[in-house]
Length: 316
Image 1 (spheres, helix red, strand yellow):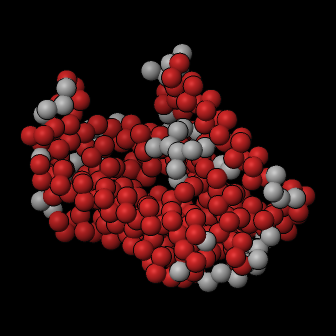
Image 2 (cartoon, one colour):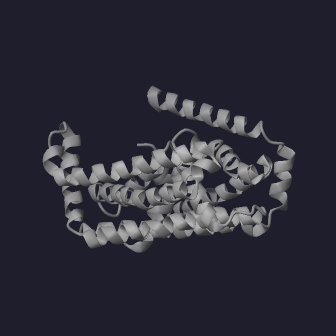
Image 3 (cartoon, helix red, strand yellow):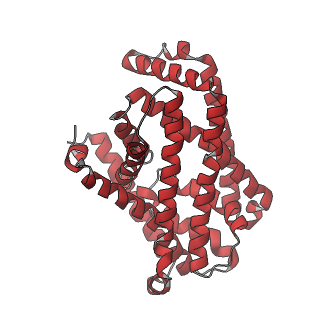
């Protein structure tokens, strides 16, 4: 049985999802949006999942490099399977739930400490290239394009760089500070801090993992550009990289289930200066969402292939 707090949070997220989606769809003619979806070329629905699978492989590679630096070896296929199964679970979990699921799957082939440290480090190192793209957007003129997106870019760039800096300082403080935490949290915190300290002694490896986060973000932009191209929206790839990292940051906020409603509204706002009809923007947003859904479907199939479906989804 779910705890009352968890049930209340789920109900809140469902309510926000329905509200956000209703707000976005009330501003479009659904019949026009359906027509735009029906007339989109078939390849537009296959390119985003293919690109998201490449990103999952990159994420698995980056995580594997960090695990190796910790002295933990994991088979590449098992790493990729953990990423994809985590994406499958994350479709319906609250924000950050996909990462928690990935940590659980990785812990089966490594250890809980190593899995958490590798995943958290990979994500924190991802913040730096993401922040650079947000700053590129601001230099490009995102605030003039759309003040709300410009404000989001500035806020998220500052937050990402602050988290990266705070993490670096935390590593310098080391396990001593973690010992002050109570009980099992302190024990885990000390082990995690020790692992982070070991990683800090491998600066070349950390730099490589950070560098590999840049193609991760560029592929996200390529997915958006391909979808917009399918809908004849005239936005160059360089402009996509200026606008959509901020849009992705807003969509990734744990407000609604898998960004539903927020995604459609953000796409409509981001493309409005081009004169793109809201219906086309919503169709493009839904087509882009096929990337997450398609990748999650592959993760679901992975459950069936390795026979873990029932066991992994059984509540504990």
